[in-house]
Picture 1 (cartoon, rainbow, N blue to C red):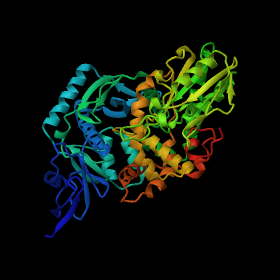
Picture 2: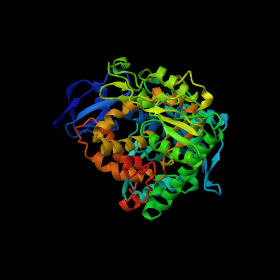
Picture 3: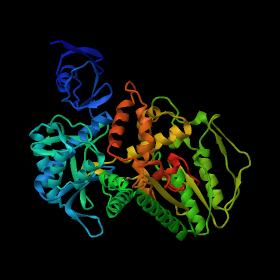
Length: 563
């Protein structure tokens, strides 16, 4: 039998293999770095290690230091947890609801819901959590293999109806596909939207910590795979995520399957109107909080990660403040950068514009204190092309009903204005905290939601190709982890900019952009993952998209906003 020539990027060498050789067998020949190989990129497509080689390929083996390696580890760990919950709590169902800073928030739910549509949750005691963790470690120590097979849609539906996974059944029946890959572990079956590791023995780094009514499944840290993520009890963020999850349940749309059914039955415009009304209530509630402190608060800071809708949030919040008789004035924090030669540089020697040191904190603090004292100040204009500030006679003085609204990535960091009276400042954190899930055990990443938003907006308004947005995203995320997420609990109010109908809108715009990325591109792997994820979602039609009001936060990304 003729051998096949494979180029292995890890060893930067060609290797001859027999037809039918698995990636796992090849990895054992060429990878000697000491780090576990979790999956592989075959011609920039993510594959599990049981993939059999029958053609020449470029192969890159990946571990936990790669985003797709981490996702492969986490999916596999979730299956072990699913196995244990199904074994220990027959008649109940595991829901992996949403991401927390420390891991995945999970609940054990009764099959029935409460009268208002919210899930009835089985409260897990510390003793129960210890038993769950101990059983997971037994399965991991046994090094059981994960299997995979292709089943028909009807076979899948029978399996998951018996497992009480109704969201998964709704999803399968709404996508129009005939076959699905189903994974197995010691007789248990489930679906995951990406490959798993070869066996449970590779999953020994994890922890489980009680949180709210459920628990947090903690997995290894990015950059330190031998340690689990530390537990951070960020109550404001968790409350916002739980609130959105419960609201989705009340609307009868806990998973993508129900959302697809609403679209296919022509009922999505009702969801659009309800979700927009919810946003309006949230804006009004935050404005009420500001108004209640009008005797002291004169500055509103708004912060949030990339594509969270900060600009729309500031404009909509300003409108609500005007309704209450306040007069919002806007100062752009971008005008307070230091001169280019004073800008700090990152580890690669490039200018680090996201660093707090890139801000002229002395000037900002002095002008804010002068404004609070009733003085008139001259607001600078920063010329990004020339890299310096100009003073051009833009004078500002705060009157009795005036209130400053300022938006920027450091707005929740107290170190930005250390000399300003904190009682004069109201801080708002905005982010797209989607709690909508694909199904019971596959949540949707809020980061993916924001990436799709940014890709659509960048291409539409700046002419940036999707490939470039994807390649920049990891750098953007590192900046958020450093400058934004550590300070989100400092917010006086948190605005969740996610919409329940959002992903079907983003699919309409993003799918054609993603399909343009060539297989030879380093962004192809991520584009393929996003396309696979979007493949489970029914897109809105142009007529349905037209029902989104011009003041919607989504219009900031897809166009048509009138704010």
